[in-house]
Length: 172
Image 1 (cartoon, rainbow, N blue to C red):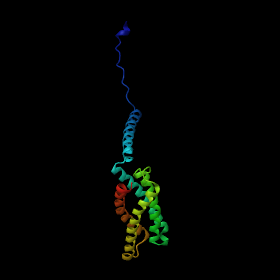
Image 2: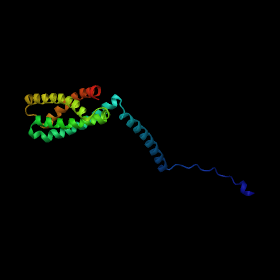
Image 3: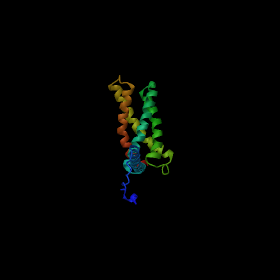
Image 4: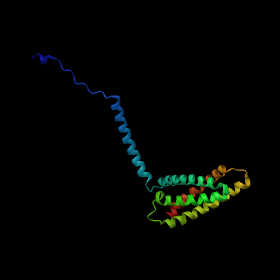
């Protein structure tokens, strides 16, 4: 019975290794990240006004990049032609993206209606940007293409704010 007299050591608790700790921490971060991005994703796709404004700005930003590229591509024909070409193409694409993504109106508003009404708003914006370009050409005749494009984009940002409100409240 001498075996019973030997004191038993308490079982050792496993000490987590650095790899185990890292893996557990990564799982926690992944879980929180997935939960947060899932909530954000649901919100950004919602019809909440702020979510629509964020989507409107994203579409507008992409449209402005397209506009800028077209403006620079057609600048050899003069700034007014470049403005016209950039405006027509970027507006048609933006109207469709706003109809489908920004305002989720593809089922309510037909393509032609969106282009007609959104295009009418764009014509008002085109008139404002063309007027701004004319003023720039007369007051600062040596201004280059990048500076003129930047000025048009600044004017377009102001017009875009009014356009968002009009599209949200009237068109879509």
